[in-house]
Each structure stands twice: as C-alpha cells, then as structure tokens.
Image (tube, rainbow, N blue to C red; front, side):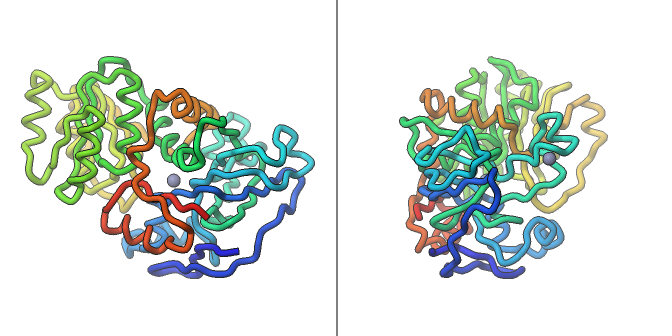
Length: 346
Ligand SMILES: [Zn+2]
Ligand SMILES: [Zn+2]
C-alpha cells in the first residue's frame, strides 16, 4: 500500500510503498482509512523546527507512517473487540489508553503512562490501512461523512478545553489563534451561548480571520488593530471572562493577561517552543491558568454528537480534500498558512 512515512529526524517525509498492516492481538482492529486530517503536530514532525527538536525526538520513533485524525471502515476485528464488527464506520483516538495504569484506572486515558500513539510510536493513518486497539474506537452515525469524522479529533481538543474551565453561557471570550482548533473552539463557544467573542490572529491569517467573522466572532489582527483598546472598550474596561490560547505563541500568555478580567481563566492548549511570561500579572489579577491536553473518551462521544446533531458544522474548516498521492502538497499548503484543515482521502 501507499503510505506517507517519516524515515528520520529532520525536514520532510516521503510517499512510499509500505507493508499492509494486520492485527497482531485479539484486542485490535484493522481500519480501512477513508479520511485522515493533517494536524498541526504532523506539520511539526514534517518541518522538524530546530527549537522543537528535543520535544519531537522524544515524541516519535522511526520509520513512522504519520497521521492520527482517522475515519474509516473496520475491515478486520480481533476476537476481544466485542463491541465492533466488520463494516462499522469509526473514528479513532490517537491512543485509547492501556486501561491498566494509574491514570487509565481514573478514566484519564489522555494521561496514560504507556502511550503508543498512532503517527508517533505506532504507524498512523496516512495510508490505506491502520491497526489500532479497540479501546481507541468510536462508531460514527450514518449522517456523518468520513471527512467530518476526520475532524472529530481536533474538535475534541477544542471541546476538552471547555470541559477543563468554568465557561458559562453569556461569558465573554477571546480566542488566540484562528487555526482549525481555534475556529472549532469558536463554533463550540457559539453553540454554548458565548457573549462577546473575539478571535485574534496575525496579518498572515487574513483568510482564517474571515472564517472567524463568518462564525459571528469579532476578528482582530494583532499586527494592525488596537485589539486591547477594542476588547477592553467592549467590556467596560474589565476584559473577558475566558481566554483560550491555541497558538502557543511567544506573546500569547502576555496578551491573555492583558485581556482577561480579574479572576478570569486562561486556557492553554497550544504546544510549541517554551516561552517565559510575567507571572506577577497572573498573581495580581488572580487569573487562573489551565492546561488542557488531548481528550477523554466522553469528549469523543460529545464531539460526535455535536456534529451529528448539526449543532456544530465543521465544514468551514475542511478547506482541502486531497488524495494520498498529494500528501506533500497538503503539508506545503499548511506550511504557507493557506487553508485550514487538509484532509487526505487514501
Ligand atoms: Zn490532531
Ligand atoms: Zn494507561
């Protein structure tokens, strides 16, 4: 089969003829991949930026088929995967949890101590087939397309952030970063009854900010607009209840601290190089800084419900649908910050 493989550290990845995987354990299933999104983390693996080298080297082993935003059809089902059958339409978690470690026993599979995530420590979904443990699987209903299915994983990242904070209907909110997770966050915020919603981006994000505006947010370009004046002006000088940072940028937390009201919450989802910030401002404002990492099984179920019930329409982020043969073009598109979600159809 054809697969997009990263063979070693450094820039790039290649389309190669790869051995078709088969299930090795009775708890595993074989998925025929119908759609696989390219994630921001895949772009990090592809680009291999020097400042992230230490983080990336720990996260992946080689050679590796990339891709974890998978939707497809079950073609083989191990004897222990009792809740599933051949032909089921599914999406899958990057690592469903070992089910046995301390965190798995607490139900916090996202903190499993023995993670072997697809696209990193096990072969991923940028291929015709992928093998995963059945603990990773979620069925999707008929009215959800495979391409929408590939967006459940990033939607889950945004949704889990809302599970981590104390957002209430009517709260005012800022989202820093108009990429796919930020815009999916804006969709969830609207579905949950956000008050005033602001989305911040850079001049290179003009197209993405336009999508944010179409979702009912006030879009601001921080390189050009007086975003602080506008947001404080719109909130009687107090600032907003919640800032969600999905960019992990150098100035994100300093900006969040300027825009948050006293006692407000800053949700950090972004992962990138590490930057210091002025924590005294956090102390003075009694602001609460919350980390949010991946998702829980319940997040998957709720994310699927949100799309299936049409409360959240993820189609505006699905900007590029490409055959697997054009994977490299997909990566290059995202490197130039063009489009939002590139979805590969093997
Ligand atoms: Zn992802
Ligand atoms: Zn575990």
